[in-house]
Length: 434
Image (tube, rainbow, N blue to C red; front, side):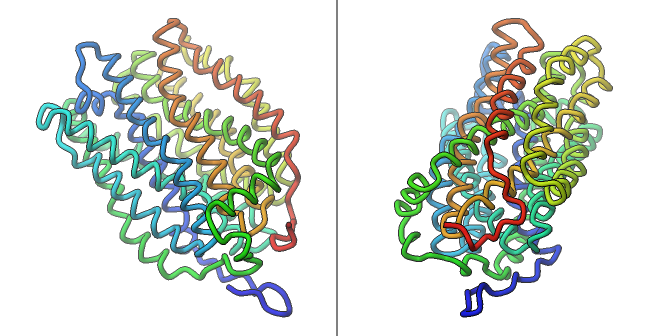
């Protein structure tokens, strides 16, 4: 799409299949995220066998965190690529790399079969996937808000968050059904590989549809300012440092909320002592809440503005985190875990829908993809990769089953303060920024 003498060209028609193709990468990320969190124990046993099951679990969670090391690199390199060469090339690259990383994990032989080579392969796979995921959110979200009608940017962008819910829902359903069919022992031995393989089946469809999307990076694009990756980063830091700092904190709070939610299957099994069958259904509650309430959050952000939807759900999580975990730990039942997961996920999803539209709307088109990619990747790298490990370590070290609640509340306080300082962007002209 190119600018004309009369102004920017009209928005390309945003069809439903195009939205699905754009958010597919985000969905794959959360599908992988949910499955890995749930199957952390058998993955640890397969690649990091240890005498102590807790050490094996922590090693598996550390492997999960390794992928986050490459996210800032992906955010810088692929995010800047999207601002220089266009959104489409970047989105095609990220989904291809993501598929490669998932395949390396799903198909890798165990440590018992090939020794240390197994660990090397899965680490390499996680690093490749981290590179892809670091560069995925910026280009795809920039595309959505640039192609969406101005009055519906919040709702359209909220599909990025709703896609996470869809992925978690399918992950939970697939895991529950397969567990019932093959049994818990088979799931721990090889069933988890089948579930990762199922996620790969949608990649070819996503590649084909993304390849035929209209480009949105042209209007308002400034080739001189985005002539290099370093040029993009320099312009971001020089002109938008305060905004980047605030968004880092806002995304950090959201990331911790998501990670605590996806850790619920492990929490239900390892901490509360519930069965594997109960634990495998936890992502269903997570997914159902994420889908509906993310879209509600996008609609609210379009109707009432970005800042209120950034703020009030985060305040609610701050207030409710400890009481909800105390009730869940005291009841220690399937119903309490499902209800707590649903409530916290619903609030987090409303909040995340405002985040995903407010940040790119605050940035000029020439650095929009890189800005969101970098701040998202760095924040998620620091907190997304560490939260599951930290909360499980805290529980093991202190014996306090409310440790995840304290951690969540602390970050929600930080997110609340940062949200108060964020600018309102509803109705802002995407091409009138400097």
